[in-house]
Length: 203
Image 1 (cartoon, rainbow, N blue to C red):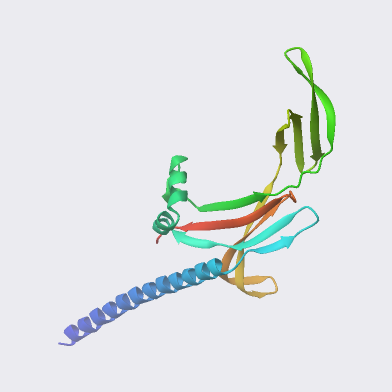
Image 2 (image 1 turned 180 degrees about the horizontal axis):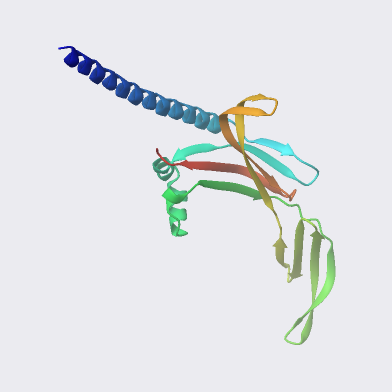
């Protein structure tokens, strides 16, 4: 009888331990999902922060979205389609970024008399030229029509970093979110919108 009671106690203890483990894992998963939802809500509701680094360099500070593969395919269907066309499987993604740029450059250039060779005949035209480190504009006015080439070189630098909820001296703990800062080295190029999505694999 005592052996039966002991066995029943052991079985009850084992069942209790298994139930506790299952509940604990469920609690961890729910906490992780709650934190992810909170971070995504904050990222969507927070506007981009613009930073003027120097006279020619502008930066934007953007919070990061965290989506699962299925969420990415549902909410960013166009991006997922493009990624597949590039020969990449969506479930192999680590992250996806998208930036919208606006180029707004005022052209101030003197008009000069010039000539161009056309079929061994020199034709009088007017030329326009504006060249500086951030824009190259060259054009020809012929018969009241402007034909021009515009070249605006731009380099985007992207820094992705972890933002911690707690900091003390050199210790950091509890990740609050992931952020990115994108800088443009051309004053004529404005970053209108930026998005960085971390793709999370379900565990």
